[in-house]
Image (tube, rainbow, N blue to C red; front, side):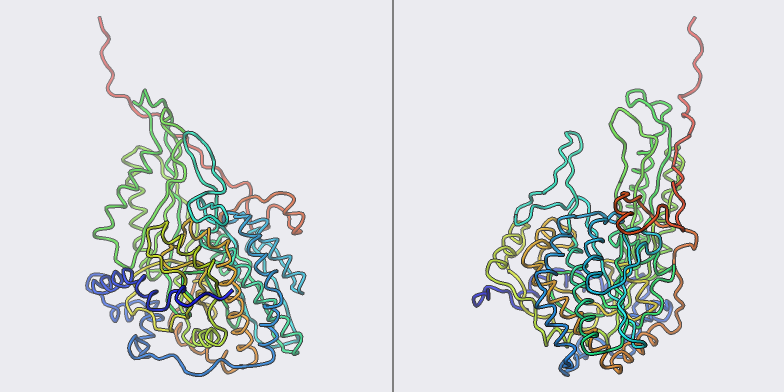
Amino acid sequence: MPTTEGTIVDLESIRTVAAHEVNRRRLLQGLGVAAGAGVLGLATSDPVHAATAGYDLAKGYVAGSYEPPADDAPKSPAKDTALSWINDNAAAVTGLSDEIWGYAELSLREWESSMAIAKMLSRNGFRIEWGTAGLPAAFVATYQQGSGGPVLGFNGEYDALPGLSQTQGETTHQPSIYNDDPYAPTYGPGHGDAHNTLGAATAGAAIATAKALRRHRLNATLKYFGSSGEEQLVGKAYAVRDGFYQGLDVFLDWHPGPTTDASWVPLATLTSATFSFLGAAGHGGSPLGNKSGLDGALLMAHMTEYLRQNNVAPSARMHYAIVNGGGGPNVAPDLCSIWYYVREGSPDRTKILYDKVVKCAEAAASASQTHLSYRLNSSIWNTIGNKAGAEIVYANMNAIGPPTVGDQEVAFAKSLQGELGRDQVGLPQAIVPLAPPNPTFVGGPSSDVGDVSWITPRIGFFAAIWPPGVPFHNWATTACSGSAIAHAGLLAAARYLAATAIDLIVQPDLLAKVRAEHAERTKGVTWASLLPADLQPPIYQPPDDFLRKTGQKWPPPNITWPVEPIIAREKLGTVGPALPPIT
């Protein structure tokens, strides 16, 4: 039901809530992204920056001088058909999202979630091929109408995050899964990045587009990429390396967020690696001679903290988690692992920082007398935007309108904001005006869609799934992603995606403009996967029932199984000089 006047936050209120973040970014912009190197210097010295900030500066796409086109979104019978299908099948699309929210499966183990999406696509005429790049929960769903025509990719993700479980409908922190270990209590996983809405909305958009193609006899091929393990930046990185995204004319993407806006903002590169320290176990009460893997992990964490002052630019990020810290204080553990993400603005800059992290790991192993074993999990390029594509989405957003919410949703949002200590401004009911990215890259999140964006134009946007003030990767985001707020946002996202897809199909000049910009941006940059050709992805063995239902065999042809174990075989350390016998 519609809200009463004044209960929904307007655009000025959104800006007020974001003021702190904006001021922080301006401060960092003033500092510059590196000592002695401004944005113009990076644009000329680093070809990757030239494709993002350098390109926009050269074209004059900067705040204060850029105005989005005033043209209305194109109208067509095919678009009407697609939007009507979404309206008529809204309950099925939101039901799929809720189903995935309930599964809350972690990265690379999205067995039920992937099958739920694949079933809906299959029922609507898509052909399913499982096991993309050897990842069992990844798939490609294809719909082809006629011969020729453009090939459009749709991004699907459906993995949850650890520790973000939340009871549906609650606005205080109430994990639905609480593991009551008296020594190490934990929460279960939850959709704190709302990938349940992402996967469902994109599936709905792909199906709606297929219905329009069939009814209006339009030639095109649609590919829905069910991507496993995005939260660990794995699925697309390996799939792009192995050629699964070749042949696309454009790639349609969106992500849940606190606002509804189109953009061509670049995202950071990222390298993920796990460092394991192998020692010699012993009693904590008799420590002489023990070699603790935990000592190695803690020393590494301590050393990398010291990198931050003189080696980490404002555009960089470095964060970690000790994923295996030992089982109890009375056992000096002989195996401990610490997992790092290293982010920067370009692959070259990320490698410089990552190499310093590796040096810290080597020094920590030497100091703790442990053996270091480390594994590259994934490494991705930064995401480049496309202004022409953003303008097409933006026009459709304005034609369709923002997500529609009611008084109950506003009250739910305000309660969450209050619980987190944020201003209770409610929900935005406005589309954020299209604006150019900050000319100085000051860091931020990453997505494995980055590699895709270098080989084909990627069009992306955000749709409001949670309110301003609620952060990504928080229990309150999980609460929103299973609520009516999410239903409104994901249906709006499905409409924007389908409308944009139809425009690109029925108006070849729009697609040509998008592709021409991509070619111009990437000129002078040769994309190559940052992953070694023989590196197999992190992988989990699926249940036999999943393999049977999806027609897969274990292990996949490109996977060596079982993986070679990491075993500590270090000798015990010295306990000091030999003492003379007592006589």
